[in-house]
Amino acid sequence: MSKENTKKILIVDDNKDLRKILVNTLHAENLTVLEAGNGEDGLALALSEHPDLILLDVVMPKMDGITMLQKLRKDTWGRGAWIIMLTNLTDAEKVHSAMEEGVYDFLVKGDWSLENLLSKIRLKLDLSNNNKS
Image (spheres, rainbow, N blue to C red):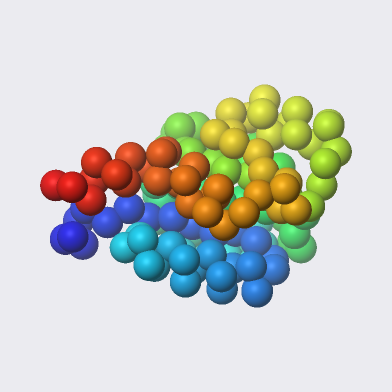
């Protein structure tokens, strides 16, 4: 697959172990992976790199995921960015806030498997068709 066709994913999560697992898994899918440990750095990366999909944690230092999402949506490019929220929270209000900002999906970390997340990523990025060309 040529570099120009490589899909780019940004992982914004303060959990280093989870980021490492996700980075390794997504690299195996021939995806370009960017990472940030807080919402402030994640927002800067998102606005400069324009990833195809953002995996975004809710609770993080410096700037939480909901705030990052709200700031991202104020940007012309960011309004249409695809987001999958990842969180340990099951707080209905946070889920509602994220959904109002137009996230693609909202996954509670204890309730999903890596394969389930990969399936959602493949579907959103249309990787099954992309890898055939």
